Image (cartoon, rainbow, N blue to C red; front, side, top):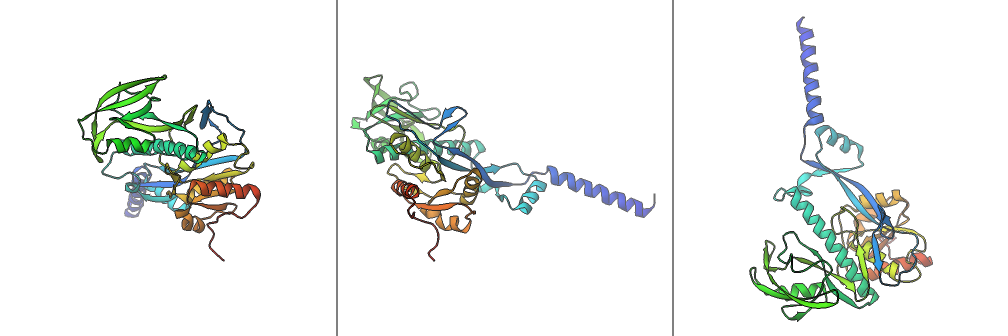
Length: 342
């Protein structure tokens, strides 16, 4: 075998080795793209996203879809180059999604906690908007909760250390001056009977006060509302959850049969906050069949810059804004718009 042949063989082997490395070598990047959308008025795997018991429920029509962003992890060099070239996904450093100081399990738990908080906030905001009498309940127990064995999911929290509780925020306020290791008395109601439970507070790295270890939620005085949607994480579904609760508890319907999608965090008092990944969420909504998209006010500039054809953008800063915008859509009136002024 002459030198030229050896050179060709060596070059071929090097190219093969590089190809194998490119196809198998992991890189510290993730790809962001459009994720699935879910109709908050409908069912997922046979379970209603928003279920209401013990209250008057009214028929709904159309769609109120929440939107998500997909994250593709464990990319190889070859896959990363292909995604860059396609332009369908955004490739970003993995540290932007999975901070190096936190384990993947911790990030997943934070996303789960944010989603649970968005469900609770949505229910509070909706019930406040509807002005229904409410009660504070144990929505969930955190892992290794100090209240484990003393309180149960669904217990009504009446008072903490003798301070009456009328909102989830009131639970935090009652614990504001406590310290880890301190014992507090929680007055609760279960199956119509009132009890007291002494709980030794735990600690949390993100707060100096004692940790009760419950996620307080809110329920109507009569009846029950449950929001459930599998393994979705993050806080950005709050607005659409709140609208679904309101739609089911009020006559007439919010959508007039339209396919509406949207996104946005929500606070208990109905303030709508910005989210990430809105270009992907709008594209997913358009591809799913939505004709209008509810955009948090602080995301409007990004939404206009990335607006896919076929979506009417409706600007919302509060839950009230969203209801006004949906009413305008149903009546064929102009809506608060993200579009720049002509």
